[in-house]
Image (tube, rainbow, N blue to C red):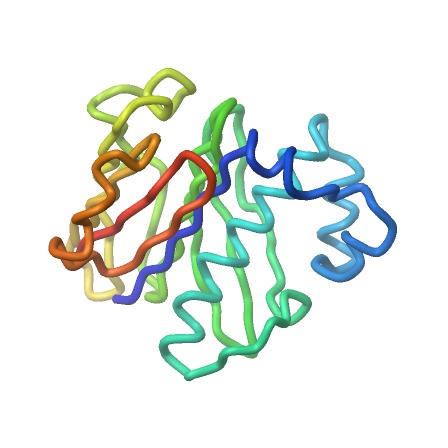
Length: 191
């Protein structure tokens, strides 16, 4: 099973990216995705939710197929479920499909994508035993996810989200399967 992760620090994104400027959405999102953004209660949050879904799936696809092009239009997102603090979805890229799980908080959006076709749901998402909510995502937090593979065997994926990256200097020694960082946050995933 391959995994990919992406994280967006919403404060940093507000400083660096004007997603409302002319052409921004058209460059990154297809018609259906732009409709999701326009219809969302919080369009900014939907932009970064869809972006993290694309990025996490792209990380898998680029490793599997040595594809290193900036082509977000070739990745297509669909949402399966969304609540105030979690979302599940699917990303398609060139006939490959990836399932995604996303944690939504007031400060960050974090998505993990999986390459296998097993069953995935939010029951495996755990922020140190709490529900996926704002308070748990704002501290140094471990997400433990049980992944049901196509073969029916559960795999544990450990995801650490570190704030202010104080502990990030030595993360390479821990050999994560995939890494993402943005602004104040560093996300590490281990198989």
